Image (spheres, rainbow, N blue to C red):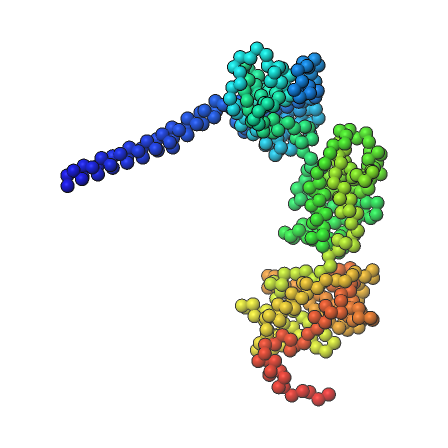
Length: 479
């Protein structure tokens, strides 16, 4: 028994020892050792978030691959980028905003770059590695008071997917992953901000599009928290989905190419007499304006106040030339059906008033004991929201002395006060046409005969079955 107990203690001690070894060595010491080894292999002694300045130099006239002829007149093109706060800006060869995501990826690639192995510690001739005149030179520094740290990239290694690299203050030549080369081999266009506009969608309160076909203004309803727009000159609500597609395309418009850094080709690119001029009026009382020009089946853009001329996606032409009639909202009525508290319905034969009570139940105003089928109320409100206008009519709304075929009024209750939010007046016309008007809408419109029939109702429509039976049993009045 004592022997078994001793064996158990020994085994337990071994278990504790192994656990301690695993925790201390595998989980702590080995991880720390690996981090130290990785740090020693890094080509740059900076983390990505410490870098505030970058120089990227690329050889313009590299020798042919595998050529042994020395380069006599190396020419470099360079890009200089600086950080201001959280944003990056290109300072040379032009001064413009940088693509922060692209520059961030560039900085990460530089700061994460490692040596795979040392090729030669003290080479007498580095030309064999393409490092006498490196194909790409990348320099970064922490701030203006510190020196640049530079990586030189030479030719690709003959075997394996690597590139010869050298750190400027060290004699050794290294092998590094060729992905480093592809990550830093960027031109000016790849690193610059390609957005034509610098505005946020929520800051836009009005957009004016002056094209060769039409001039239209769309204004946002700033009083509501919703993205509601209207055609200002017609005072007609805009179709949210249709206008949103155009607005998004304009705000997110990006350059596909820089044609010129100076405004010296306006006539050639169709910008002296533009296809369209789009003005964005902002909530801070400022504005941004872009001009769009067309030439040889290509579309070009210029932002007012800036000289740079861009080529942009030519499919934008169709959107900016969209006629105002296509932006008109075709919904018969827009409202929140859950907030409707009262409905007035009138036809040639009868009129009735329905009121919502506590618990979202509905009653006839003239008969509090009536049993109303709430599903029928919901069906009516849903139909009103779903019906689409077939067309707007050119004639303005006028008051009429004749009684309409259907009149529908919807009310909301706010602060114990009922307010009419929708009033629809519908009348049948010749050849199965149905003409209508809506409060707040300056033009009359038409809907289909089928949709009109969906709105035909009677008191019986809304009663629950037991009240329908009682209503049917009532003696009919003699005429």
